[in-house]
Length: 162
Image (cartoon, rainbow, N blue to C red; front, side, top):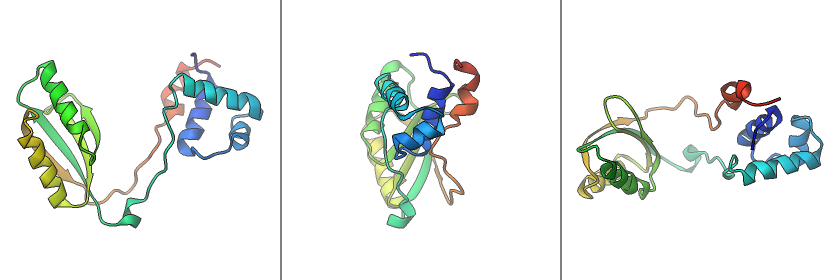
């Protein structure tokens, strides 16, 4: 499926507000409701839209701790990467896992109930023989802002058809 500017506008609007009505979305992207709904369904079928979710204000629920963790593996064979990724994917508190270039192999993001929970998770991960050589933890003190959307317009505007 070749995307055009209208498809990009639809994706941008939906990632900012997944509960927008089709009529509101159609108006926002300058379409009538029926063609707009058809486009949304095509974007879903083609895998551009992978789901919808609610954004939860964790601070209103109680105390949490966010920790970014740099991980270096002992070995760097494909099987070592696969074993590590399988291990961290099972950890519910690990909400992001990035294989990166630079001085370490992975950057992980954890959201836990506190420092004791985080340390217990890391101890279990090390004991599970997931292949960790070393890790460094960075506790988040404050998050002045967190954006839940990516800047689709500036990233892809010049790459889509008219």
